[in-house]
Length: 119
Image 1 (spheres, rainbow, N blue to C red):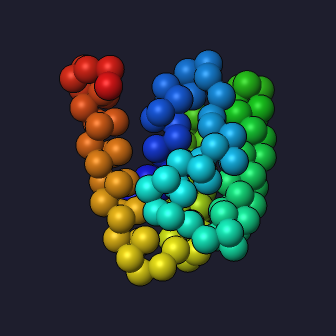
Image 2 (cartoon, helix red, strand yellow):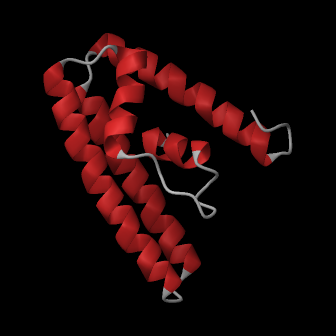
């Protein structure tokens, strides 16, 4: 599962010169889909803030001529860990909605990757 990091990256053009969504915006987006409690919003803001800091460090490493394959592997691992942190905060019903939404986002991203449109 790509997780919300993958979704945010897809929404922002795959990191091609654009910034990822701010943690607060990502929480707002999830809240619209999942109706988060205040406690969940706080926890998810922390998760996304930590992820943004890690992503920034990874991008800086890449600009220094880092190994792309190793970086891709690190990012996939980080996305999986982040997704686990997100789902750990959600209720069972929210997890079902989140997973369905993620599946939809992956399908849209794949469609764009194959040149199927710019939705």
